[in-house]
Image 1 (cartoon, rainbow, N blue to C red):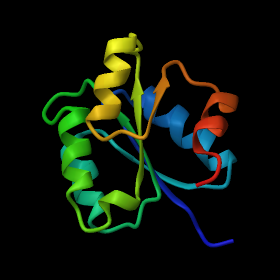
Image 2 (cartoon, rainbow, N blue to C red):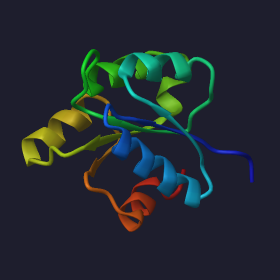
Image 3 (cartoon, helix red, strand yellow):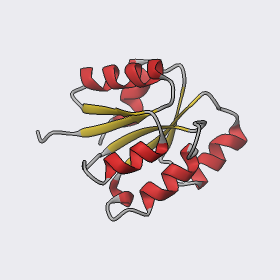
Image 4 (cartoon, helix red, strand yellow):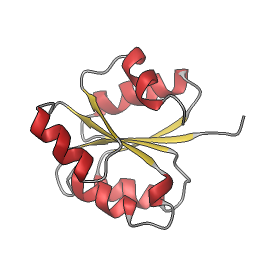
Length: 120
């Protein structure tokens, strides 16, 4: 199996660590970014298959970061997961309409993460 690259984007170190650790246990080569700006920079250098992307961050929001990732040459091929504490039905619809593939509600656990990333 070829190496699979993932990125966990969140302004809270604990959330990044949890996501990266769980993905690592699932065989992913996971990196972290503390901002949308850094996520965009890293995405130009690494062929990520999966990005867990926080919605509420200082600077670029998760929605704006998602739109910019989608506009990149390989953007359509990346599975971008909203990584958020926001889970109201109308927010879910907004996130999916904004270009996210799925929503992963914090706090996450390994089983839910496995369900969301299976098949990538």
